[in-house]
Amino acid sequence: MAAVLACERPAADPAESHALPATPAPTRARVASIRVRFDNGRPEFGKAESSEDRLRAVAVFADADPRDRSIVLGLVGGGDAAGADPGLDGCVRQGSVGGGAGAAASTRPASWIQLMDVGNLELRAGNLALPLQIRLLPAVVDATRGVRYEAVVERGRGLLAAGTLRLSATGGDGMAAFSAEVAVPRPVRISFVGDQPPETGLVRHLPPGELRVRWGSVDGRADLELLAGSETTDVPVWLRCRPKDDGEFVLPAGMVAQLPPRSPQRPWTLMVVRRSRAAVPGFGDGGLTLEVADAVHVE
Figure 1 (cartoon, rainbow, N blue to C red):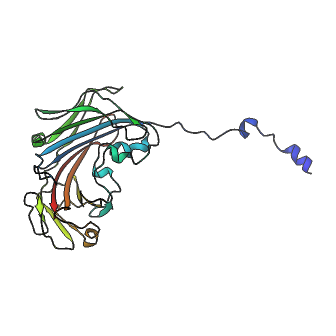
Figure 2: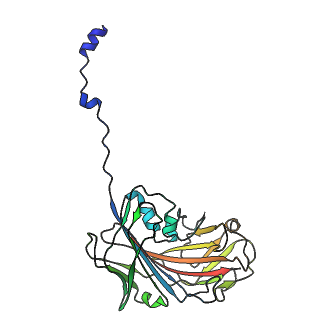
Figure 3: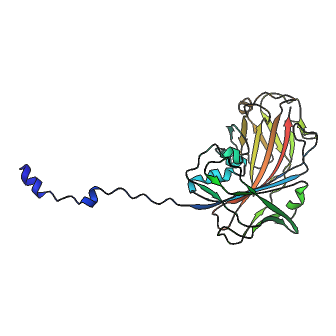
């Protein structure tokens, strides 16, 4: 019977017996990450002089594996690329705030990342223009090479007056010329911390427990973020919250207790950031982020 069954079994196809599952070719994507940030003039901790309404722009344009999108976003910094997003009216704890090339280096890319030269790049608001200068990316991110665009200007409030910012590039590295426009959110100012108005960017002698923060304007078109932490502690701990933009938010006492002790030498920093976004043609969804921010120190 075994012999009969053996004779009836169809012969195996040699090609089938040695075939391996097909592996799809890796796909690539073009990813843009542009962060434009305006900080209200305020005293900077450890410095006698205050910043003068500083506007800073950083941009990268990448040919990358789609799995490396978060790394590309991290190359320009920004709280919204620095960990899990809290839910509305919620907070999360994280070890750092901001980002940049150094922060992005902590994650190894799935594949190589090529940062593209897209020609001359500038921000324009009405008749005002701010050219971005091209810089080589510091060699701190594995398998990432190319250029980054940067610009910093003091007294940059005039660039927000037109209501919109336009980013324009002349094209390069196989990219045609392109432009993108983002709406300017309403300015934001912290008006009270607890029951105290900030004086020269500083609040003192708050009682322990919950931390109530109020700001003077609302904007239903933009996202809002509140950050609380210490810029001077050896082990940074930050609380990152996503309040409704209704003018007031209370950090619960249990979350506040996770912050390091505060003192004149090591104050807390509170930041409120209002953020709007726009797509960049040829680079998928999103990509261009405009932030307006205000901050105070809490002794």
